[in-house]
Length: 322
Image (cartoon, rainbow, N blue to C red; front, side, top):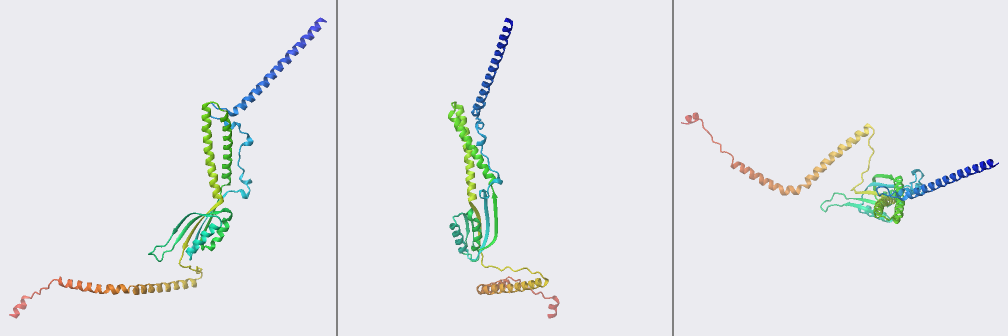
């Protein structure tokens, strides 16, 4: 009986020791796990071996900025830089310039640059021209292009479009990410105690702020280019409008056109000859007497310097005379 009782006490003691050991192991494992979690949390904002800052580890995945896909962007949100160029001819040059500037002011646009070429005081036949770079509000750009027919005759028109939607939103997302990193660095800077850490953090903050300013400048420039479209207008003064005729198609039409052109060339030749002859009469009246006097003087000089001819008589003639 005593042996059985001692055996039962021994079994109970063994189980007690085993359960205590397992509890200690589980407690130790829990402590290690908690310690590792604390270390992982503390590593989110620590300095590395060379004094750099691992500020990106503390960033939540939900806080990371990302650009929307281009396919998901609404049409009204697309960023398109519109531009165009025009060449216009007009008989009323000054009126065309005035109409153009008035239209630009009426819609809230402005003249970015201009280059105006006039006529010289001693030149009666040259024509004038003007070249403008205009900035037109994007909402009224197409209507403004349509109204340019009232300025003059459009002889050339080109339109362009540069879609920067993806580039714009990528830049915007990058800037937001940099701002989040800036906030993280500021939090670390408030807790930093070592001088070398403070210097490193301030250097990183300066670099990030420089990048943010550059991205903000790009976004502002793009916003201006998208909001105000660019239109380059060239206005040329002409003396007359020439009616364009259809080219001849049949053989008879070609012969008739060539014959008409030949008659026109002959008429132009005699017209130019008559204009030159009649128009040069005042000059002939002045220069003709001078030419006659010069001719007489030259003739007299030639006579003076002409060699004297000596006549040699033959000996036979002398003998006959004697």
